[in-house]
Length: 110
Length: 114
Image 1 (tube, rainbow over the protein chains, first blue to last red):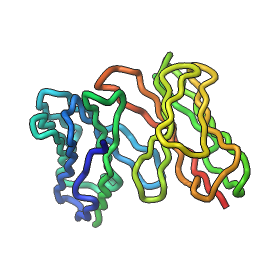
Image 2 (tube, chains in turn purple, blue; image 1 turned 90 degrees about the vertical axis):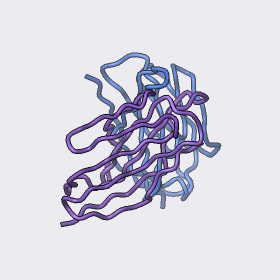
Image 3 (cartoon, each protein chain N blue to C red; image 1 turned 135 degrees about the vertical axis):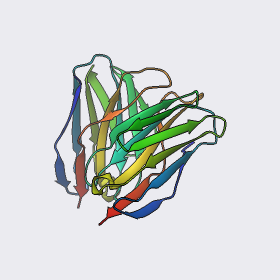
């Protein structure tokens, strides 16, 4: 079953922060985050493994709460280059491959 | 390092014409391979995936088919295109690790059916 992302879309001014959530109805083993810029292919950002870890990548970080079956992506001091659509991909115990979420469109303006 | 190629980059085809899109991966062996379609402004729809030569799993019944004639080659085909086949077609590969199997996408093929 497809994970649900929220919000569906968000508009930020440069320098503002944003949080993107990814929720699953099933227990998760890992969560992957991707960013897709307009007209391009999705690019892998990071993976979070079962165990409640948190990861960072420059000013983009993420957390994974396996009890709540959800992950959150944090974008701090956003830059114009952060604009794009963010997808989470989840692995559940019954799936043999990633299932991608509905996507969150992020637009950063001046 | 691993590289994934797709061609062509763009394609404009008339309704009813055949289709062949190709994807190849370099720098790895026995990858899992995937075909996705993305309609404008929409999410990623998994069409087919393959865990080995000749092994194809179809996720969505439609007029498309996939083949894997070689270990690192994945082909998406259609005998007769429909208007609804327009979209951005993405090929991806992964290493096959259970539960942590990151997928890496190719540059995509933008298909317009007129």
